[in-house]
Length: 431
Image (cartoon, rainbow, N blue to C red; front, side, top):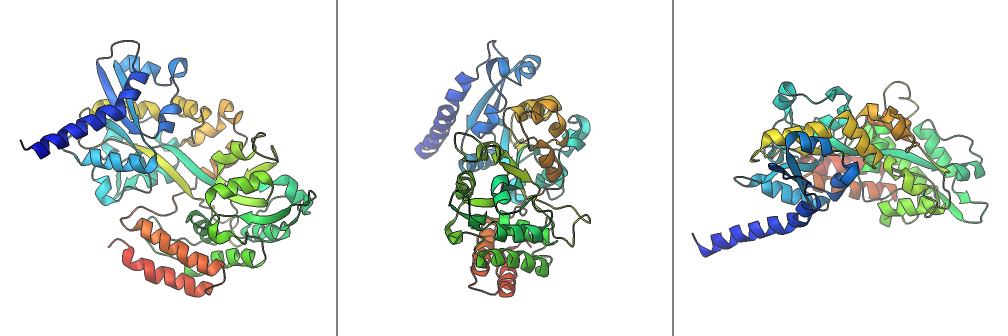
């Protein structure tokens, strides 16, 4: 064996032991388990399963005579590590956590298709898991991941500021939202300037939501690029109209996601679009000037489509996968089954996880801790990802955002911007 090869193997062994050692000792069971399931995830996935007396997997560990060893990273490093592990001839990791916008055909091929597992040893009431989340984990007709966590977008509004602006109820259509945002661009009773809506300019979520409100989209799950250009134009015209009226910040081009939270907490904006999970943060008395006054509803659809078709809000989700080169796939599937059960899904939700089961939103223990549970459940039932994964997805998103910004800021006619999106992104689309 060459020295180079020897060094590579030792480096990999060292990295594996160094990254997982702390987690291994931290999660060592009180008994001597006969086997260990190694899990590669974000720290949050470990945290929501609890620890010690609140360990949601305690009975599973005893039943299966197994311990769980967690190796955790932040999102992007996690995905990179997961794909590298799954590309080896063999991996020690039985379960990995994947984001739904990452599994291209090539990536999906690294993981076990799970349809046969479902048929032979099914997950409890699998149909209860939101269909849009399952769709996001299905690649080339094969299910490669079981949804476990999501962040679904809702429309947040400051009830107190709307009242000051003379608005008695939140909008029920996209057109009403635009008009209310313009009306709520004013100086509050406290003397502070308020902008109608604050949105980040560097996320595809927002132009996609506005396009969907008119029946359009950026890229469908079937890889149709801007299937309805007129609907995309209507969505961008709505954004541009708000910017021209001062109902979007003058700093729109440099506004980022965290700015949205800060502006809402400080009362500098009346509306924004954020995951429902942000509700607690927006209403935290230690951070917000308007605790209990910031409410959330479903992002509204256009008047022409209201009561005719559901609004497909944007959702990002995590799923659990089994690498094809995993050593103990049976134990990995047993873990996934347990984590996906109604009991554990509820427990994780109470611990702060975005529950993937629609029924969890009706559980009294969860509702008691989550005032937006009912509305989020309705939104989740029809939500789907901003666009499907494909090799050039990141570049396609950047191109979309470039053209959207030009259109919203008035530097390019909306119709031309939409045509440019189609022309520039088309060569990036999968064949």
